[in-house]
Image 1 (cartoon, rainbow, N blue to C red):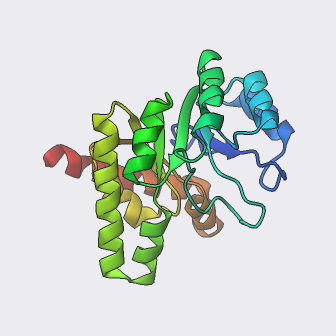
Image 2 (tube, one colour):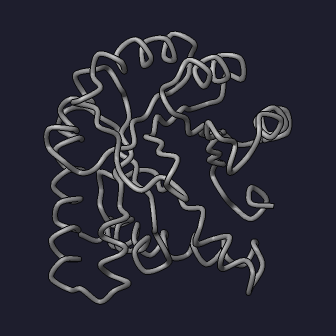
Image 3 (cartoon, one colour):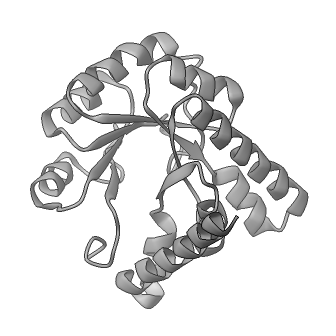
Length: 219
């Protein structure tokens, strides 16, 4: 339904505890999808083996904590550098596009480039929460940090994605950033779909992103 409504791809997070989806979901998605699958995963031997067997279009490495409902922060690439280097190399050798889900922090972005990841996904959760809570100054500061991080990543030769907590408003704003070429949006679309249906929710999100892209081109 999402693809038919205009989604460019599907992101699926197979957690260690199988909280969101199960192994069979990945197999069925790979067998049936006509658009790319972005496989979110922790950098564990189990998940690496599953990714190498499934061969999705992309694998996004994220941190996992059992206490989280969903991923709440960026990966510590600088702190886990030695662990991540062979994982990234193995996935890339299998023809899988690797991205790292990180905060818009200069050290993390620079390390992401150094360890060989071609793509980063900037964690937008803190900005989105500040916007929703009406914390104007905090939201402005977080958005500037994302803007600076995206520009830094682009200069380092990284492809830049963004995601977490985005809704129609924030997706439109961030779509205007020329460095950001992909947004990963899940929770808002499913929440909106309860009221309007998934097709309508995706059409509205697509329109919001298009408005952002138009502002990018006009700048």
